Length: 159
Image (tube, rainbow, N blue to C red):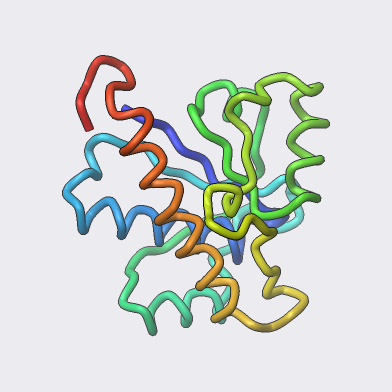
């Protein structure tokens, strides 16, 4: 089983969108049982909050179901994940601070797997949830392709 954790600042917009988009991609391909997918925030500022309404609305418009409650990431969460996929450079620095610079082999920016590496646009500031959705979808599809092409025998199980 491949464990993937998506991370943003508050865990109410981008990372829960990524979690639900990625779960949807896995469902469409019949791969859900081969992955454990979660999302977290680097801050506890939104701990216990539901997904931000505009983020949820954007997902619903694209036919992506699901709900979410915000949680802050811990060092144990990092240790127990195969991949930590952050949304931007600030999240990356926060995770590296949390880990003391360890576990770098499993920490990536989500869009580093795409044809045009970039930060995921932050809709909290831009209010452009559709652009964030497109960035996240591109990152999730590219990451899934990476895993399927390069890591298909993880844990001795063909995925």
